[in-house]
Image (cartoon, rainbow, N blue to C red):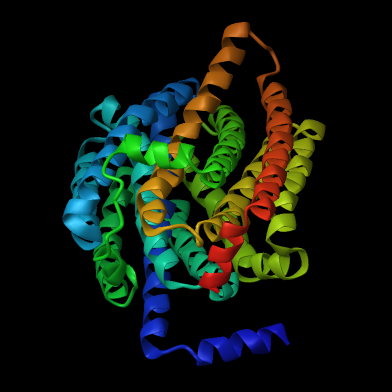
Length: 426
């Protein structure tokens, strides 16, 4: 009955709505395909030139660059508008990627910079895409459409990971970066076409007071307990993910020494993660929301990931660490992503664009700095079993995450205006 109801809702949509959703899917496909290429490439070259022990310093360096980009984004978004801001970012990404592809093996600093750069620009592209989606799709439609949009994005990740996964040794890791340029062109066309059919143009002409800089966005988050809880959830998830990512790369560096073979292994690992992501996006998110609802679904995620961490403690092998990494990455880009995005639907447009940018771009990536602090502390203290210590730390953070989710939905139940906004969106 549910599938028939979904089919009926899709058939009842207008032509404009269907084009909007299709363009959103194309955008998601292009962004994740780009990430599927640059992630294993940057990861492998970074390991070759700097090694695993240098990852914490790269994650710390993300913070100032992240701050600069979000400050410029919030400052000029109101002046340029969504369309021109997006095109300016696309041109900047194309220029930087081209420069890095040419110089990344010649200048060690470029490998360091490109690793940081790709972490930020991908999230900034996703932030702009989902901010437009939130202004147009209602909550009743989001319960099934968000999973479909994410799933097509997951297919893009699978497509993108094919290049580094099977052609890195023949093409060469740096040359794979050039493959992002046609994806950026396709993304630009789809985004502009989608924007014309969105509700953003109408809402931009209202008298809402825009958030014009980073600190105003921080103030908006601090003044909203609901946004603050979303911020905490994002930080906790990303710290846990980063700790497992460090464990994976530490064992990858010692197990596989040759750069291009390492790129291929990383590409295949990310390809498997993207495949599982698509399955979870197509079926997992809908079934989870249908049987458990939004609150219990959010509570279930950290519980499942606790078992994932326990598996690494019981069997601390490279295969098990790889499996744990695949699991948390698949959850990050599927169930966690979909459930998190649904929390933004009742918010105002300036919160969806500027305040959300601080959470989903700055905090999302800067959470790696928190993980870096934990890793450097463990290194300074001289712990012998670093991998086990990080796993125990992940378990503790997952328990804290579950508690934060419980308190967030307790606030939601005690704050009728949030439920009123959700009902209006439906």
